[in-house]
Length: 459
Image (cartoon, rainbow, N blue to C red; front, side, top):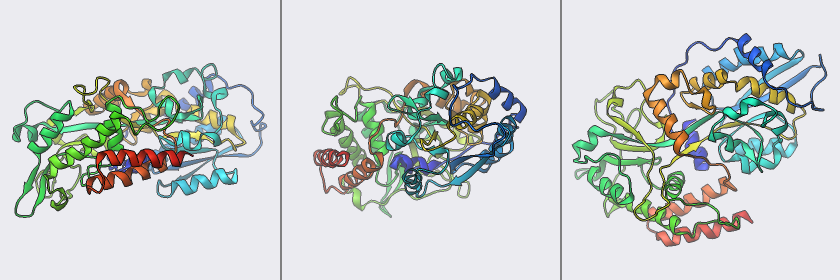
């Protein structure tokens, strides 16, 4: 779910992304899960509920989960659910984030398919009109446990109504190697404004004159080579207090914050690669995280700082963590008073299709798969932060890294909810930012191009 996250943010988000997970202890026993589910507040009666004893198949479509996750669902959650609902069979189909748009569009165009579908962060606006209003089953007053979900819940809403439940939070943090910082002569910690970042980029980046290639890169922001990924732009933009849309709902890429974010990306690339950026080779690919050490060679992989999700960081049992800090991105408060620390969060979620004849059953399965214990276990199989605040215990608090990430996500998390036509926007932005780094367009021309093309896309 790593590059999927990149790719997912890069198309969402999309992105760029490249990931690691941790192991999971013994799962909660199925009887306990079933008991908790049966004690949950009952949803109102629904006409789509199957009669007792009727044979019904509840279909669930999941994307790119670990084998441990799927095994846990099939061996514990589904049997417990089927035992509590005689005549019901749960069927899980595993898909991939490759080609997801064609697959999902097919379901909704046909008006039939899985009852529950695994969606990405920005897809609430993309498919919202085709998703069921689940407030009567999962909203306040219907399910008391909904109050335990954190900010990720906004990604599971459309038009103010719940369409499903969020699984996890996977924010983008700034990971920095303190030992490499000090070796480069940088002693003030993670930069906290634009001027510090560009100074740090020129101070801590190293180019080998023999090969004219980077051997050390001060910051790898999602995409190491271009340094102009659209998700990285969004993180910078939000940290300035930028809003994607104006009060009238139109795009806001002609704002001072948008221009400043674009100029910053250009400045960082120049500070990293030097004035002849196109002629300098990018950082070579190593084994493992770019801020870790390659076990085969014993050498650093080359990055001093990494702006990415935890999936791209070293595995939590790696010794390098003695020298790694985790921070939000701080914006540029000297020039933009509305700047704020930000971690840009992916929130995968499960949505119920409006065409589903089994909405009440789908809600009951979600309640069972999203109890306090179940949401903890689901995320433990992937090494991610549970969407439920009360599920952030055990492996989360046992890990200093995850605990820190969870605290930052709760305090500074900004999600992808509400992005209109996210797939089109990512394509428009990536094209324009590509022309920025080749100097085909100036920062002013880049934001003007995005504004014009995005307005057209929304029409």
